[in-house]
Length: 175
Image (cartoon, rainbow, N blue to C red; front, side, top):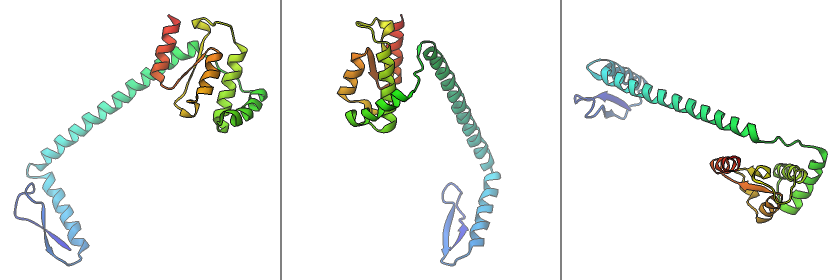
């Protein structure tokens, strides 16, 4: 099909169908003609304004991402001050195999769960104080099991699924 320019304004109707003839060069010429129209006759100003708006939005997105990165670094710094790194040993790996069966967890989740249990069992205190309590933060709903929650609570470990909730929990126990 060949497209040809209409005599009407570009805003009214940019083109009309002329005839059912296959002519890729006609479309290419039309595209070049449209670009020339946009560059001249006042249309270039609209393009410049549009580009300015795109630049402003891009700048805002970049600044927003940078601010989010700074906030994350601040929060992680707070967590690193109070968090404990839990080592993974062969005893934990063996326990993970059992947790796959008893709790229906996949291999990765079972390793995580077994390492938390081992860590909490190593630091169990009857009637733990706020500073002795722990928390396990995950978005993985495979851990949203009442038996898992009960096991963790029995060891003084709170199971949380939202980061902001966990941050409030930790801050409330540190003050």
